Length: 147
Image (cartoon, rainbow, N blue to C red):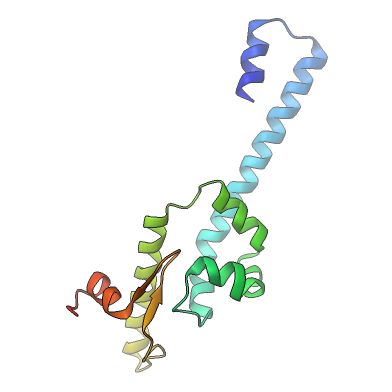
């Protein structure tokens, strides 16, 4: 898009060429807006998805793409193909995503334990966005509890 605009600025365009360039710009902006909307949808609904799934010991990526793609689509409106497109575009920073997932799980645990429920007792691993850690590592890092 930038190359086409630069080339257009270097020479005079015909009316048809200007129209074509404008149509391409509109299409580009439309695609960009669709991606933004999908990201917003993902960001606002993924916590609901994480709360509904029971695969706490697996990575969020695996749960979305392999274990519960239908639930993911139902909750977020995005299918696995959309999610993989966002991943391939480099939209997600793994470190930040792992941190966000682990923090969500920490708050989920706190709220469940407050009500007297511990549905994850006996688990040995906790999954993040694309990594899995042992429960001991999770507690040390996110609950400030020495192993």
